[in-house]
Length: 557
Image (cartoon, rainbow, N blue to C red; front, side, top):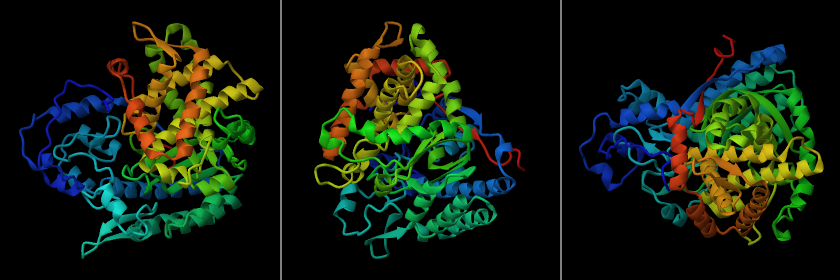
């Protein structure tokens, strides 16, 4: 796939170094010393660092109770430990490599990317000698192939909460997270227990205690249920090993992360009614009956929050602005999920990124349809749409996640994008959502142009590339000679239904080969689109945000 950005900077050939050995890249290139252009990588970093807009994460703390204000610093401290653990998972040589980097901009870019690979430019290395990013991060032994893992007799070969290692005799074994990271997890657990002692909210108290126990046992089910049961809490924390984007070998092993959240009660109340509509929306999906026979859980919640701290996986590269959890398919089917809209982060991306993109790439006549409420709804229903469609294959291959492995995440994100738009369309027709369909479709189009910039290393980037190319083929938009995009609203709706059926069918069949073929054919950036994205770069329109956050920013120190 093509890189997110073209550059006339000569990127250096890789040189042999201790860091190549550390990160487990054993390709021939890393063992051959070659000449380097001295300033090429520092120039590259200097060009790439401004793609991130700095944003302060704050909120109105006056809505919090006295006990919540005491709890908040404890939750942030626990989140900081998740950040430490994510570094150990994605680049355990952090300190030794940082000691060799003198350029301050490179050090800053290294921190944003949680390692020496540019996450928003297809994981391009930007530090001398590090080699290509290992697909398995540090979850698997250095240099080990997918085939070796698949052929092994490991009982926990695709475990969500363990790493694969070689023992002293050379045999493969697994180590649970709660053993490997025992000291750090015990510290985080203790902080959650302290917070549980202070809180006056019964639901939050139960969740914090159970989550504290889960961190040191890797048994998360009880705490997931308790999290879904919370209703009256003003504070929330999502914490633990959750998403599996970092495991690009099998999409199996999870990475540590945390969000510390302050609930917006007024916005949350506005959103409460939509989850009850899921069964009817599921029934009307534009796909054959056998692919929509499942019944989505209706005990789910939609809530709006201000996020005051990101840590670990969710803070790396492109920043999450909405969350749909838990990921456990059994819990989803039985009880549903909680969809959390991170309103302040969403507003920052809309103002700093989406609006400027629209002014550059959306036809002038249609720019009036770019609206925050439409952006909020599109993102919100993306998360709700994770609950629609199909969780188990119809081909006897088990859950879709298990069948598609490393091909699962990007296709699932594509499903949520398109079914979210399908939900918006259906709810507008029923009068359950206010506004003009042109607002939602035009803002969705601008959203595609925003998200393809995340690149092919991102599941969300791939999903939006597929959507862009599919919609282009269906005539859902036209591009003028000057490079302005105009939405064809009628064809946009048709393309939405066709792509919905295409993705759900792929998931239901559980055919990983067919999904890989779809990725190869559709999840790429054409030369024409690349030239338009380059225009955004020349206009200094940021690709994403980076946060100033913590107790100091909140004025609590």
